[in-house]
Length: 135
Length: 69
Image 1 (tube, one colour):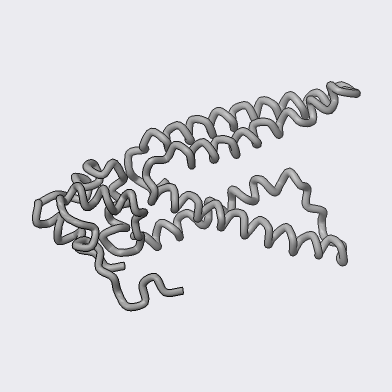
Image 2 (image 1 turned 135 degrees about the vertical axis):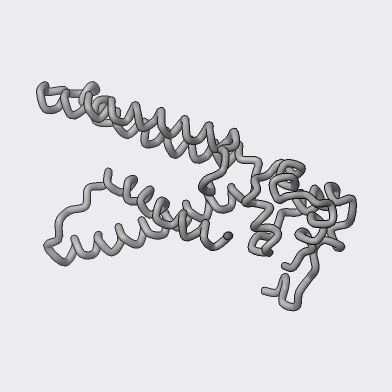
Protein backbone atom coordinates (compact mmCIF):
# COMPACT_ATOMS: atom_id res chain seq x y z
CA UNK A 1 0.00 0.00 0.00
CA UNK A 2 2.76 2.35 -0.86
CA UNK A 3 1.45 5.57 -2.30
CA UNK A 4 1.35 6.78 -5.87
CA UNK A 5 1.91 3.55 -7.84
CA UNK A 6 -0.54 1.57 -9.95
CA UNK A 7 -2.41 -0.85 -7.69
CA UNK A 8 -1.58 -4.52 -8.08
CA UNK A 9 -4.34 -7.12 -8.21
CA UNK A 10 -4.29 -7.93 -4.47
CA UNK A 11 -4.44 -4.24 -3.51
CA UNK A 12 -7.26 -3.62 -5.99
CA UNK A 13 -9.25 -6.52 -4.59
CA UNK A 14 -8.60 -5.37 -1.02
CA UNK A 15 -9.73 -1.82 -1.86
CA UNK A 16 -12.88 -3.05 -3.60
CA UNK A 17 -13.77 -5.41 -0.73
CA UNK A 18 -13.23 -2.66 1.84
CA UNK A 19 -15.35 -0.21 -0.16
CA UNK A 20 -18.11 -2.81 -0.51
CA UNK A 21 -17.98 -3.52 3.23
CA UNK A 22 -18.18 0.20 4.03
CA UNK A 23 -21.12 0.59 1.64
CA UNK A 24 -23.03 -2.14 3.48
CA UNK A 25 -21.91 -0.69 6.83
CA UNK A 26 -23.58 2.64 6.02
CA UNK A 27 -26.76 0.88 4.89
CA UNK A 28 -26.88 -1.50 7.86
CA UNK A 29 -26.22 1.23 10.42
CA UNK A 30 -29.02 3.29 8.85
CA UNK A 31 -31.39 0.31 8.97
CA UNK A 32 -30.46 -0.53 12.58
CA UNK A 33 -30.73 3.05 13.86
CA UNK A 34 -34.05 3.55 12.06
CA UNK A 35 -35.45 0.26 13.35
CA UNK A 36 -34.56 0.97 16.98
CA UNK A 37 -35.61 4.62 16.81
CA UNK A 38 -38.98 4.09 15.14
CA UNK A 39 -39.86 0.55 16.09
CA UNK A 40 -39.45 -1.72 19.07
CA UNK A 41 -37.67 -4.80 17.77
CA UNK A 42 -37.66 -7.67 20.23
CA UNK A 43 -36.22 -11.13 20.56
CA UNK A 44 -34.15 -12.56 17.74
CA UNK A 45 -34.95 -9.72 15.32
CA UNK A 46 -33.55 -7.21 17.84
CA UNK A 47 -30.30 -9.20 18.05
CA UNK A 48 -30.09 -9.49 14.27
CA UNK A 49 -30.65 -5.76 13.81
CA UNK A 50 -28.14 -4.88 16.53
CA UNK A 51 -25.50 -7.13 15.00
CA UNK A 52 -26.15 -6.05 11.41
CA UNK A 53 -23.65 -3.12 11.39
CA UNK A 54 -20.97 -5.36 12.89
CA UNK A 55 -21.07 -7.79 9.94
CA UNK A 56 -19.34 -5.49 7.40
CA UNK A 57 -16.80 -4.54 10.07
CA UNK A 58 -15.91 -8.20 10.52
CA UNK A 59 -15.91 -8.42 6.72
CA UNK A 60 -13.16 -5.79 6.58
CA UNK A 61 -11.00 -8.02 8.81
CA UNK A 62 -11.69 -10.99 6.52
CA UNK A 63 -10.59 -8.71 3.65
CA UNK A 64 -7.33 -8.01 5.49
CA UNK A 65 -6.72 -11.75 5.81
CA UNK A 66 -7.49 -12.31 2.13
CA UNK A 67 -5.16 -9.47 1.14
CA UNK A 68 -2.31 -10.98 3.14
CA UNK A 69 -2.96 -14.34 1.48
CA UNK A 70 -3.20 -12.87 -2.04
CA UNK A 71 -0.41 -10.27 -1.98
CA UNK A 72 2.52 -11.74 -3.96
CA UNK A 73 4.83 -8.82 -3.17
CA UNK A 74 6.48 -9.72 0.13
CA UNK A 75 7.73 -6.17 0.76
CA UNK A 76 4.25 -4.65 0.41
CA UNK A 77 2.91 -7.43 2.63
CA UNK A 78 5.56 -6.66 5.22
CA UNK A 79 4.75 -2.92 5.24
CA UNK A 80 1.03 -3.71 5.54
CA UNK A 81 1.64 -6.07 8.47
CA UNK A 82 3.82 -3.46 10.18
CA UNK A 83 1.07 -0.85 9.90
CA UNK A 84 -1.39 -3.39 11.37
CA UNK A 85 0.97 -4.05 14.28
CA UNK A 86 1.19 -0.31 14.94
CA UNK A 87 -2.60 -0.12 14.81
CA UNK A 88 -2.94 -2.99 17.28
CA UNK A 89 -0.32 -1.53 19.61
CA UNK A 90 -1.80 1.96 19.67
CA UNK A 91 -5.35 0.59 20.10
CA UNK A 92 -4.37 -1.66 23.00
CA UNK A 93 -2.41 1.14 24.66
CA UNK A 94 -5.15 3.76 24.29
CA UNK A 95 -7.99 1.46 25.37
CA UNK A 96 -6.03 0.10 28.36
CA UNK A 97 -5.08 3.58 29.54
CA UNK A 98 -8.67 4.78 29.02
CA UNK A 99 -10.01 1.71 30.82
CA UNK A 100 -8.04 2.54 33.96
CA UNK A 101 -9.06 6.19 33.71
CA UNK A 102 -12.69 5.04 33.57
CA UNK A 103 -12.13 2.69 36.51
CA UNK A 104 -10.67 5.29 38.88
CA UNK A 105 -11.81 8.64 37.53
CA UNK A 106 -14.99 10.05 36.09
CA UNK A 107 -13.96 10.30 32.44
CA UNK A 108 -16.42 9.80 29.56
CA UNK A 109 -17.15 6.16 28.71
CA UNK A 110 -15.46 4.83 25.58
CA UNK A 111 -17.97 2.75 23.63
CA UNK A 112 -16.53 -0.53 22.37
CA UNK A 113 -17.66 0.03 18.80
CA UNK A 114 -15.27 2.98 18.63
CA UNK A 115 -12.27 0.66 19.02
CA UNK A 116 -12.40 -0.41 15.37
CA UNK A 117 -12.21 3.13 13.93
CA UNK A 118 -9.52 3.92 16.51
CA UNK A 119 -7.50 0.96 15.19
CA UNK A 120 -7.80 2.15 11.57
CA UNK A 121 -6.95 5.71 12.59
CA UNK A 122 -3.73 4.40 14.13
CA UNK A 123 -3.04 2.31 11.01
CA UNK A 124 -3.65 5.37 8.83
CA UNK A 125 -1.32 7.56 10.86
CA UNK A 126 1.47 4.97 11.02
CA UNK A 127 1.42 4.14 7.28
CA UNK A 128 3.06 7.38 5.99
CA UNK A 129 5.81 7.09 8.61
CA UNK A 130 6.48 3.49 7.57
CA UNK A 131 6.61 4.59 3.93
CA UNK A 132 9.17 7.27 4.82
CA UNK A 133 11.31 4.62 6.51
CA UNK A 134 11.73 2.69 3.26
CA UNK A 135 12.18 5.68 0.95
CA UNK B 1 22.67 -6.40 4.64
CA UNK B 2 24.67 -4.82 1.81
CA UNK B 3 24.01 -5.83 -1.75
CA UNK B 4 25.16 -5.19 -5.32
CA UNK B 5 21.69 -4.89 -6.82
CA UNK B 6 22.12 -1.31 -8.02
CA UNK B 7 25.41 -2.17 -9.74
CA UNK B 8 24.02 -5.32 -11.34
CA UNK B 9 20.97 -3.43 -12.53
CA UNK B 10 23.06 -0.56 -13.91
CA UNK B 11 25.29 -3.02 -15.80
CA UNK B 12 22.22 -4.23 -17.65
CA UNK B 13 20.82 -0.69 -18.03
CA UNK B 14 17.59 -1.71 -16.37
CA UNK B 15 15.42 0.76 -14.52
CA UNK B 16 13.99 -0.16 -11.12
CA UNK B 17 10.66 -0.67 -12.87
CA UNK B 18 12.31 -3.10 -15.37
CA UNK B 19 13.76 -5.17 -12.54
CA UNK B 20 10.50 -5.02 -10.62
CA UNK B 21 8.66 -6.38 -13.66
CA UNK B 22 11.16 -9.21 -14.06
CA UNK B 23 10.78 -10.10 -10.38
CA UNK B 24 7.01 -9.65 -10.29
CA UNK B 25 7.19 -7.14 -7.44
CA UNK B 26 6.58 -3.41 -7.04
CA UNK B 27 9.17 -0.74 -7.85
CA UNK B 28 9.09 0.21 -4.17
CA UNK B 29 10.22 -3.29 -3.30
CA UNK B 30 13.21 -2.98 -5.62
CA UNK B 31 14.08 0.39 -4.09
CA UNK B 32 13.83 -0.99 -0.54
CA UNK B 33 16.01 -3.95 -1.53
CA UNK B 34 18.63 -1.80 -3.24
CA UNK B 35 18.95 0.60 -0.34
CA UNK B 36 19.37 -2.34 2.03
CA UNK B 37 16.34 -1.30 4.05
CA UNK B 38 14.58 -4.57 3.32
CA UNK B 39 16.20 -8.00 3.21
CA UNK B 40 14.44 -10.40 0.86
CA UNK B 41 13.13 -13.82 1.75
CA UNK B 42 15.08 -16.83 0.48
CA UNK B 43 12.69 -17.42 -2.48
CA UNK B 44 13.02 -13.78 -3.58
CA UNK B 45 16.80 -13.91 -3.16
CA UNK B 46 16.90 -16.99 -5.42
CA UNK B 47 14.69 -15.19 -7.92
CA UNK B 48 17.10 -12.22 -7.92
CA UNK B 49 20.01 -14.58 -8.50
CA UNK B 50 18.14 -16.20 -11.40
CA UNK B 51 17.24 -12.82 -12.97
CA UNK B 52 20.88 -11.69 -12.81
CA UNK B 53 22.19 -15.16 -13.76
CA UNK B 54 24.45 -15.28 -10.76
CA UNK B 55 24.57 -16.61 -7.20
CA UNK B 56 22.97 -15.22 -4.06
CA UNK B 57 26.41 -14.83 -2.46
CA UNK B 58 27.57 -12.57 -5.29
CA UNK B 59 24.56 -10.27 -4.80
CA UNK B 60 24.34 -10.05 -1.03
CA UNK B 61 27.36 -9.29 1.11
CA UNK B 62 27.44 -10.23 4.75
CA UNK B 63 28.45 -7.42 7.07
CA UNK B 64 29.89 -7.72 10.57
CA UNK B 65 26.95 -8.06 12.94
CA UNK B 66 24.57 -9.59 10.37
CA UNK B 67 22.68 -12.53 11.80
CA UNK B 68 23.82 -11.87 15.35
CA UNK B 69 21.21 -11.88 18.08
